Image (spheres, rainbow, N blue to C red):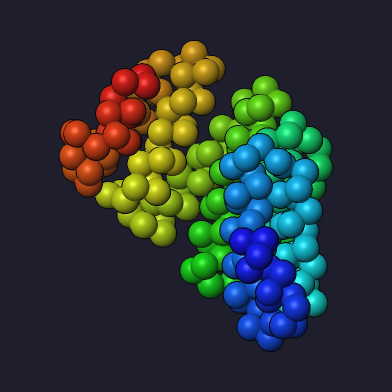
Length: 195
C-alpha cells in the first residue's frame, strides 16, 4: 500500500476515493502490525484530504473520526478517543440517510466499548441499549447486527451481575446466530461458549 500511495501521490491522483482507500488500507495494515501511532497519522492524512474535498459535515468524515477514535482507544488514549467519537456523532447528527444511521450505530458502539474500558458500565449499557434499539429499527430481529447488539448488552449485564437479563439477551443473540449461520459456524460456537 505504501507503493500504491507513493504512485498516487506522484501522479497527483485526481481519483480521490482511490487515495482514501489506500490511506484506509495502509492504516489498517499498520494497525494489524501494532503500529497504532503510524496508523493514526495515516487516518489523519485521510481525514485532512476528505475535509478539503467534502467539508466538515460529511458521513465519510465522521467515519474517519470514528476510526481515529478506535485507534486512540486501542492505545488507552481514552480522553482523545472520546473527543473523536463526539466529533463523529456531531457530524452524523447534521447529516441524514441510512448510511449515517449505520455510522451512528458504529460510533455509539465504540463509545460504549470505551466506557466499558473506563469501568463506567452504566454509560456503556445505555449506549449498547441504544445500539440495540437502532439495530432492531434498521435491520429487524433476524440480522447479525442485531445479534451482536444483543450479545454486547448481555455481556454488560453479565459484568454487572444481572444474570437473568444477561441470559435473556444472550439467548436472543444465540437464536439469531443459529438461525442465520447454523450451529457449526465459529460465531455461533463463540456465542454458545461465552456465556
